[in-house]
Amino acid sequence: MGWFESTYNKIKKGKKKIDIPDGLWTKCDNCHQIIYNKNLKNNMKVCPKCGYHFCIGAKERLKIILDKNSFIEYDFQMNSDDPLNFPQYVEKLKKSRERTGLDEALIAGEGEIGGRAITVVVTDFNFMGGSMGSVMGERVTLSIEKAMEKRYPLLIISGSGGGARMQEGLFSLMQMAKTSAAIARFKSEGLLYISLLTHPTMGGVMASFAGQGDIILAEPGALLGFAGPRVIKQTIKQQIPHGFQKSESLLKHGMIDLIVERKKIRPILMEILDFAFF
Ligand SMILES: [Zn+2]
Image 1 (tube, rainbow, N blue to C red):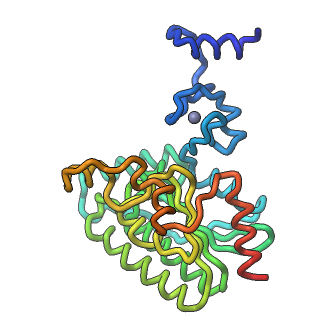
Image 2: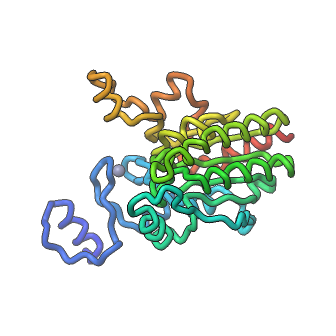
Image 3: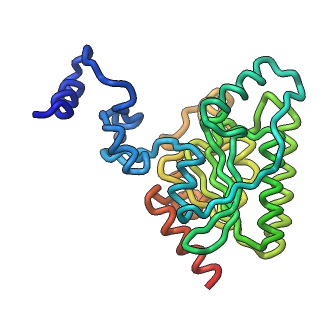
């Protein structure tokens, strides 16, 4: 038995004092099994044992979905400010930038899927919960306008559990109206908008552009909604049904069109684009 198996067996048996090098294993949030990180990475960060979809960053997402080396990032030359002098906002922005290597909670640009040009925006949960401040809202809007100008289809992949960014107050909430208006203009031109919802997408993001796709796809088991289950439970003082606000429940109630496993997202997008632009 090699080191790998013996360590794995010890962990499985619940022995605590084992010297494990950092970053080698991950415990699945759903089935609590131990997964070798290399296997997790090779499986697009989906648990090989139970199919749980881990959050992934915007850069990883682009790699999975777009044709190799096709992405060109839009350079909008704008960064978040602190309009309300909100306590610790500047520090949080700085930490998120260092942690993710992104300058905001999204990446926007254009690339190709199966050789077809597309404008793509991806929000990143690791950057302040993927929350929408004024710069994110403006960048989403400008991306929609770019797609309109070039007559490209638009794909927005949301992973925004943070909703509207509370540190910017009303400036954040205004982005809901602005991005929604841009989507409405985009649709009035007869162009195709695909929204892909990933765990978790909530609040002001879900209630604006993320919920407005011509076609709305979602990853399995994603938490999707406006107010979170805990807030609703406290407000209505009632038990919430099992699986409430999960992708499967939204599909059942007609809020989304299709649940797609991560490895099937690219082939499904290719199929949709082929169908729309035959
Ligand atoms: Zn699992």
